[in-house]
Image (cartoon, rainbow, N blue to C red; front, side):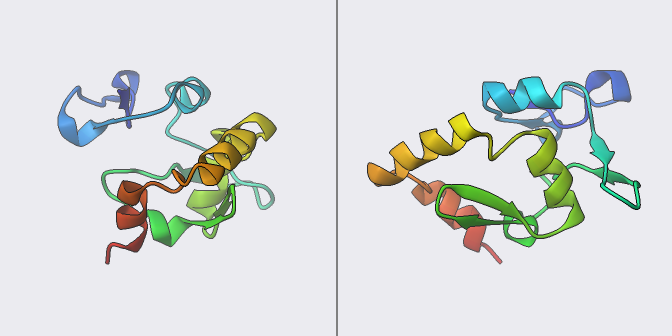
Length: 111
């Protein structure tokens, strides 16, 4: 479990502010709540799994997670969604018919 908004930023330990997170994402995110975009260098918040729709910010192309918004861009970059090892893991899941999962597909397609 990870705090979407870290406690040091006033986030509470309540279900609305908690999300499941893999260890690499949890470590990469730390207590950050956003990042600075490439030029023009402005602050962009991260994707919020309780408030944002996944399909508005990301698409899946094979084993790659591609951003489609600035929120998606800073989230993909800082959480290193497409690092070599993570993409290799997804290829294994794809080969085994487990990626994306049925649950993930439901979230991707929800209106």
